Image 1 (cartoon, rainbow, N blue to C red):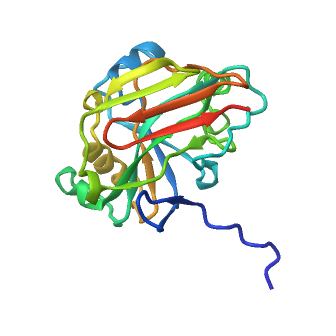
Image 2 (image 1 turned 30 degrees about the vertical axis):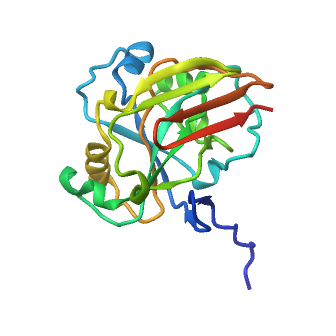
Length: 227
């Protein structure tokens, strides 16, 4: 007899099919675009990549509203390429990394920037700023068999129709294959893992009533209402 009713598996729709992609973990690459590093940290862009996580149930599926979170006055948007893994592996070589990818999507790394700043200053974990409820809006997953493995293309985000972030995937400091190689030395990647691969410059505030739209050329678009 279960003492607690098991939660339903978090899934994302697979574009063009009736299939669902089950989400196991969400890994996020920090500071992966040089212009974003310059606007937030001024760090050395050649430092090895670092990672943090969001819980799987932070996923906000297409069509769902985003409730403005508690305990923050600086909610920020960060548009990102999402990579969906369907083949397990540890210590994956960069030249073999793309074989572990099922497909791609577009996500928004919602961030309580004021809480993240406090965590940085006090050398504490980032979870309050990054891993809160609904903090990972995501599009449907688009199979790589349909679109290949994009390594360039416009990535953009607008708030109420005004473009705030406008970059290109080719400006990633650590391209997808390299990010997978580094991440797989820290954790064994498993089917169902998602990797959010960092954001270009232009991150900024959101308030209740905002409509956020964004996309990546050749992959997908996303739209979220902040309520």
